[in-house]
Amino acid sequence: MFRDIEDLSAKQRSLGNIFSRSIRIWEKFGDTIFEDLIGDQQAWLKNDQDLLISDERIGRQGSRSTLLADHFREMKQKAGDWGFERIHLICMIRRQDHWLASHYAQMSDRNPQAGQEDFKKLIRNITSPYRFRYGFGMLLEYNELYDQLSDAYGDSNLLMLPYEELKQTPAAFLESLLGRLGTPSETIEHILDETSGTKKNVRSEQDVWQLRNKRKRVAGIPLPKWIFTGGEKTIKLMPEYTQQVFECYSAGNRELALKTGLNLEEHGYFGPGSSSKNP
Image (cartoon, rainbow, N blue to C red; front, top):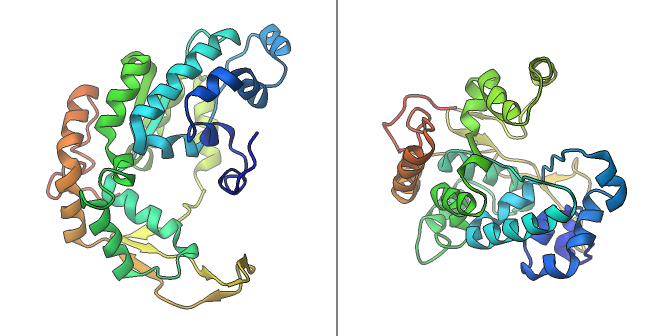
């Protein structure tokens, strides 16, 4: 639908790009948005189907959770015209310190400064109220995100699941996730079989994350991945980094656990010493 640089770099993920704009877009282009997602309106209404949308960029708007919730409210209004009686939100969360380390490693191939000192700087900036804490840092304020989304759709239409449960108890995780979607039990077993050998994007061991090879550019054009520069190969999530992160987020995590019944303490969301597990 849109053609600016950010849209194109996101490979035209429709909702992720739309949610970064004003909510007024639903009033002007709501039908066009659903046509882009589904196709012809009358054909869709005849099929009487459910729809599952997975777009990682939707979640990236969580740093502005009020705007994100407003988009979902507007989407709900237009969805009624397309035959949808209910919208259910599924949100996966991850321990904030692990999320930051994984995100940093995942993006390291496009960061010429990637390394331990630069990662340390990111932690310092994310936790600083004068830098990113109330900007990008709000993406990891899961309690605030829950409040805004549940206010938009209600608690019964919002499911939050910790990523750590997928790592440790995948069957139970999938039962929660797919059960809410009405998925047959045999399908859950099939998914487990299909994904059992899948590799993670970025591997970590004992709080060490592997960085990606830095790609060279000529006149702004990235060269093939096999042409890369040297540099540090890993970053380590130091205990002091984790301490800094949870000084910001542990209070909100505790509130979220009370509201949802999620056992976040078991997965270390309350800070150092709250769990012996380290997924």
